Length: 260
Image 1 (spheres, rainbow, N blue to C red):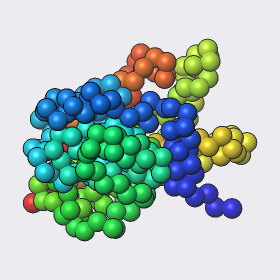
Image 2: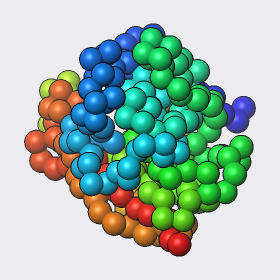
Image 3: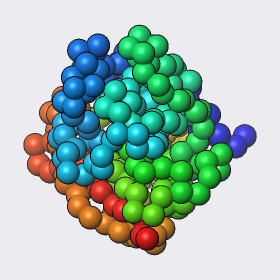
């Protein structure tokens, strides 16, 4: 049987919503009120805010929140004045966006689909794409970058977060259980390469499959798709998430712009 990665990931994130994962908890009414007043902060990675200088004027800007459901980024951007479409593979993550929109009277569009296929959107549809860490759940990032470049307007920006590929070298689960942190996996990493019983456990527990991507794929992939890199930063996570946090950054965020 061929594994449908996108469908398995959809079920996994629906489960995460039911379990109250950090990335699925809607923002408060207070944060929406602050955003309406021009006071807002957004995150592509766990802890470090995205610089305000990375954003264009949001007043009536057409924004695509890509694989970004959960009632967090999309409602904040809508409250700040943008015309927002939240595009996510998880029904329940999109439902979180709709709950905030209904609660706070926001105009917000939701579309369910695979981040690798934006064919329902015309060329040059968006001024900004906001794409937090999520391409870790697909085996090939190049279709994402190509589609982002296509649907951006010339001069439009892609703000993207992704995992530092070195993260996948290590034995995080064993280290959290008390074993020494050590190199365990070759790169590129894929959960599909795990032993059969471990893959089966991920399937049965509805845990999304993860894949590492090289910096060449993440950054040069954007350049080859027709985007120009303008800035980047690194971010940490938490010691509770991984002991590697004490030694290096675990994620990266980039700002790139579509060439005229």
